[in-house]
Length: 249
Image (cartoon, rainbow, N blue to C red; front, side):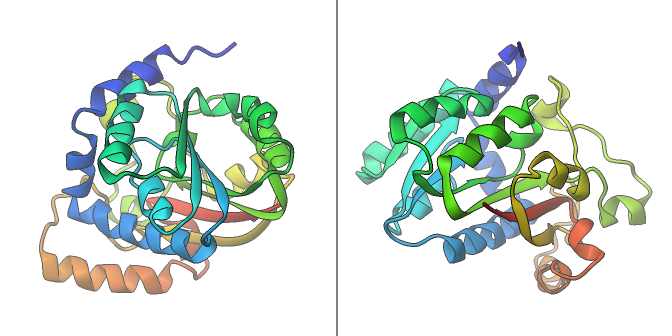
């Protein structure tokens, strides 16, 4: 059995300031917009997709507004409370949410059925916070249709920025409070060996880490353009602060 108490409490605490903290960070905002554009390119109106660690809905709501039905799962009632308020204000009906650890998504099989979903994704940290990845792999494989995509964005163990600044990656923010695991792309791919790998991208290869003190807008714009260019090229695709993998069942 896995104890999720500290994970749940930590995300509940940060839920109070999460949107403001994330969206006001220019360095992270570049990565967020790039990731969101990629998500838009992968799913279309009428698709039913699973958001693992949906948080306050920063990805789920934009997708839902494009006609995608989103099933959101999150361990934090604080995060889900924020999401539900947004859904009510915006009158969005095509988002369903469940409070549970990501490893418990096997419970959704009874609700939606085997091979019922058109895709799944998880952005920026939830899977680093999940100690039972094997259960996620097993349940996802049963939930997704043949040919469906699973698109995780995972915080990397090593990145180019760390190498260039000679600063080894350390846990930051709420991640100091519980068991949080950094992954290398190859290591993470092995955990989902039932799926085929179609694409790997590095996010934040050249762009400074979100915690860096570089705030010059012109410089960040330039670095973002360069970052977008090299993100698909080996070995840079393996050296972002985060990496995106497109798995296909």
